[in-house]
Image (cartoon, rainbow, N blue to C red; front, side):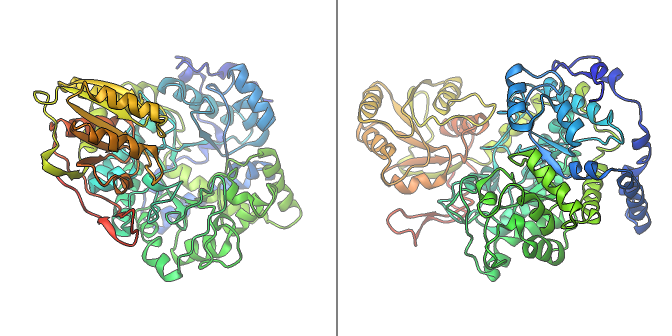
Length: 616
């Protein structure tokens, strides 16, 4: 174990960070000018870059090469001094106590941050953790900077919450239809991530969501129109990468038409090759043209592209034949999490990483057992199933990415910039403006909306209160009620849940008797949902009722009697506050459906087409 006592990070944004950093190390000296060379659009510049990077690779041991291929979780807020509970979990799952021990043992090339792994308490702590990881890695023999990554999609999936800026999710951006907003989202999010020492974001989602029953993608997609998804995904890629953060288009070859969640099962996509070309491939082609740094694989079976029955993550015809050779992509290919059931169905955890590399993958993300996976790859090279040259190909792509985003030259967080970058007034205001352009008015019969505080002073907000996405205030009914109160209403919140009982419905109806208007937050309403009963009973009370579908816009198909309905596409604070401003008439609704809503009684017919959206 190396002595890291002089560089231990406390997780408190210690001022010792700069003095504790190693001076420009010999191994980094070998890369001097790499970032500049990457900006030179000449064959000579690219050749010089590769020469320098290959020199780094040539000095690595086999074990170090294997480590460079892995991106793993690690528990704790500090690289060297996590809480005891996180030490215990690290020992149980990873066989090490800390991130420092993990890096020393496995020489991993990347680490992924999660809120549930206690990596993301606050921006200064995140920056201290990032720098602690880099110090440990650079203190190793031939040490290289670690590529630190996270899933900061915005909307339903965020790992770093307040006070960082939380922006509308992909389907909301799809409803706004603005490439400049998508680019701004990437630029704002990227700048904040980079200040905290995060270099790679697993966003945007390039899946075309054509299945309303999709349990895993849904509102994480920009929509159902492949050209619109392509334009917005490419814009977001450019935004992130302009801020120095590697973007990741996912989940290749396309996860938008499935009713199975690949976290828990093995989805099968039944599209023909022709349909794939017209639908799923379009956003990935656009992301590649935009220069996306990485592409994430999907743990899905796609028989029209590979009839072997293997998931795309392990498919050479899909990853090498189509992605590399047909689409011409030579950037980093990263797996989705190797702990997901979709990739573990056919093969054991020791075979999956080896087969992924043989298929054409470069980065192996979050295996359930790092020790099993790391040793499996090492053994595969030693017994000849994989060659060391094959590892070198992937490591070169990874190092190119690190160099392109400045990680080799300056891997550090920028704590001095956190106060003027993360969650600034300008960024929060931009998020609010973007959200206002996404809120979609689906129904407004008889001019039910907007509500007027002079006429509908007392507003009751009821409905579903799903667990809020990471780092948002929540619950949704409370956020809506607070926002309406700030706008001049006397609003109260009553949580009724996603499956209100008869007694809860009665309580809501009784409360509505003392209100001038009612707002109902709905969440994934189905034919048998008691949320329908709640809405019908409130409508029968005679009070003006407005429904706010806080996740899927498809809710309106199950609520035919509703006279006013908004879609927000997620239940984060920024989207709910924008919905409140629309309800109050402070801003006009401008969003338009990025997916069709089909009739509940006849799914072959559209109730509302793509592009539908009303205004005041």
